[in-house]
Amino acid sequence: MSERGQRRTLEGVVVSDKMDKTVVVRVERLVKDDRYHKYVRRHARFMAHDEANDCGVGDRVRIIEHRPLSKRKRWMVQATLTKATRV
Image (cartoon, rainbow, N blue to C red):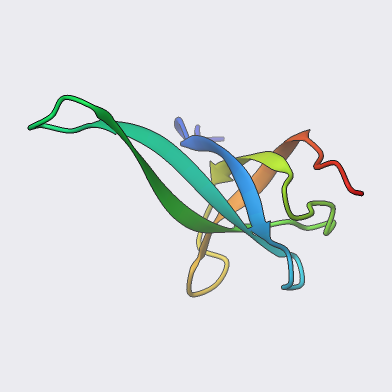
């Protein structure tokens, strides 16, 4: 059996769980500004597959690269790191 290689993993916060078996995860990163040498916060949104529909808005999750599952879905939820507190 051949090795799959090292797949990328990212951590982010779930911002939408309205779709079936899909969540939208916002991943933030810090980038140093060339001119002012300050760190600026950048973000990207990834659609990730959530087979059991366990994730909710505000949950911190780890996503892993996966084969294309649909037009925009190329990531899969690997683990839920922290659950959001509901009021």
